[in-house]
Length: 146
Ligand code: HEC
Image (cartoon, rainbow, N blue to C red; front, side):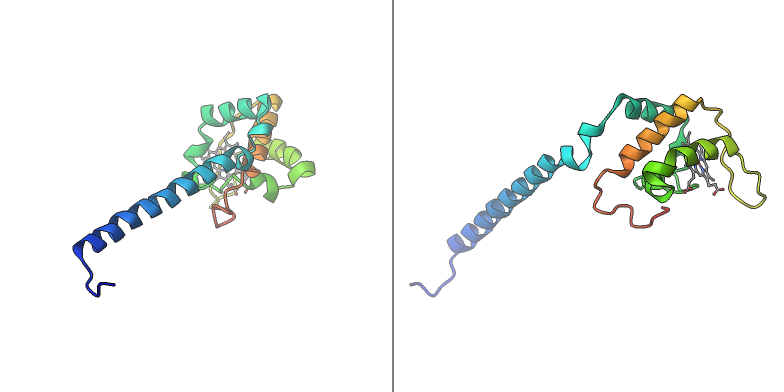
């Protein structure tokens, strides 16, 4: 066996290593892609969730709030608000009451506008936020209220 480390050997390690880790990268990417439908609950995408997303967009809730860490940092994170505020039994009543109460008018406290949404629209937003809260984000964002 030769004791010298030749240029050819160095090149083989370089190219071999690159190909090896590129294949690992492809395999991990493929694996992540495969888990998306389950992680994002595509099966639970109802028409109400879709309407709720539209109401969310048309009223620019993201202009003040974050959703799964994305958005503005004026108001609390809402990706997990369903779980923080009552879940299955309590969230819908909470959201209806909350939307009707705005603006709270407490001085020194950041205020949320009155959107005058219909009961149907609030129900749909509740469904949208419920669906969002069930996305598996690996615990993101790390801070509960964003
Ligand atoms: C102009 C900024 C602004 C916009 C736009 C806005 N919000 Fe808010 N929202 C706030 C603020 C500020 C708070 C926190 C108020 C407080 O704690 O008194 C809040 C709180 C909330 C909460 C309670 C959060 C919690 O942790 O208890 C919910 C739910 C909510 N907003 C939903 C919405 C929805 C749905 C929309 C869109 C239709 C929306 N917000 C649009 C400013 C905004």
